[in-house]
Length: 178
Image (cartoon, rainbow, N blue to C red; front, side):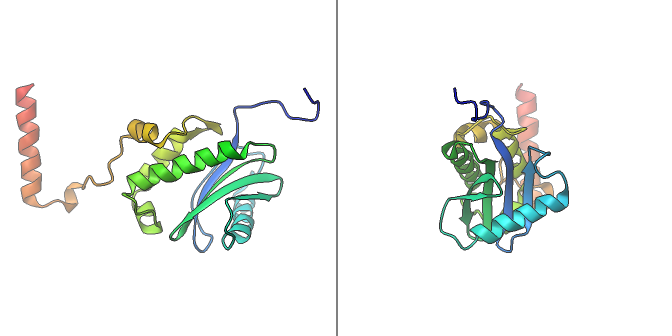
């Protein structure tokens, strides 16, 4: 094996972040804290990435020695960052899994407001796909099955009294039948 190539590693993802159409952070996870240890450095990196990619019609960029794959939808941008030697197809599979999973959770309405309203589900999806920089899953159906998140579940405050009573009746009926 060539002595200049790095050792193979499971730690393939250096960072994952989602920005709005102004370049503001909606979500970010940095898995290699030596890369950008402070919040200021992370935000500067995100700003540089956004400035390079927001008008481009590509899917991949190389910046500051990093391989960056990205995708946009309506008013948000999704980014997955790996080292310069990282396989772009692996990073793209993570990005596609993230996008497809969120598309299902948000009922195909992948935009800023919906994403912010369902941020708990977004974090669950990200944590099921990547753990500490290691890719755990690239199949969106498997991710959704593990997360078991339902965006259309209404909290009690948004339900009518009749819906709450009906739900209570069903729960009592099932508890008696057990």
